[in-house]
Amino acid sequence: MATLNDVQSLISAEFDQSGSVINPFSGEYERRRRLVNIAERMWREFNSGRWSVLRTTASLILTIGQPYVTLPSDYIIGREDFDHNNQLLKIGSTDYKKITPNQRYQFDPAEPLVWFSGNEAIGYRLNLQPTPSEAVSFDFPYFSKNTAIDENNIEKEFMTLPSDKTKIPDPTFLSDYALGRLFRVDDEPAKGGQYTQESLTSRLVLMASQNAQIQGLNIPNAADDVSLEPIGGYFQL
Image (cartoon, rainbow, N blue to C red; front, top):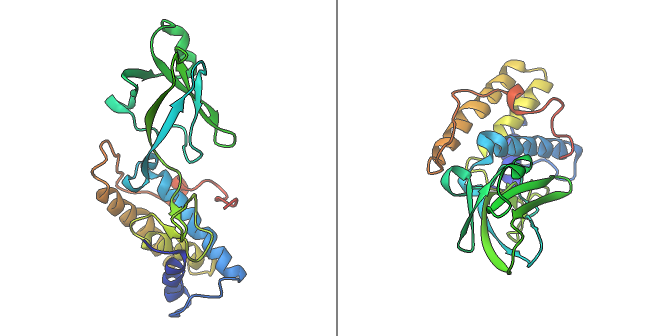
């Protein structure tokens, strides 16, 4: 796994024509880190985040009489990975059918159903019908939003420290995207466009091919900066 410093080194080699990383306490290092994290988040969102390296399983426990269970903090709505075309979640010996919140009134109150509530800011809940009559643990498979780990293997949503490691299989996607942005700002649009094209087409398609074991991937033939990154970028990173 490549560290943030590894990616910064790739950027320095091309943009600064230097074999060493710039000062990690400088504003320029921070600017490049933010570009790298934008690329990391773009990769996570590509193909709805269904990358094998992001797939994980949480062990959850239902409490008697409680009609919901709190989901892990690294879960994003729609990233669950249930059985039978993502429609059934096994809890104990029962298959619970996934529905939307409004659909629950269309079913018999005794029919086993699950639906989600909440948002990314406050967290998500998995709601159940009927209310559990006994405590039971079950596996909740999903694709995490954590795309990095620190030097102690603690998962993170994005890289902040030079020693943090990205889960992205090809770190040149990160450096190429950052270089594309840097060269465009540096009034070299042709060179910037070349790096952007390389990162947003060839690299993404290559990584999608590496994840072919995940069924149902929709791999486009091309992707562009506008379609994958929101206007204004992810400045909160």
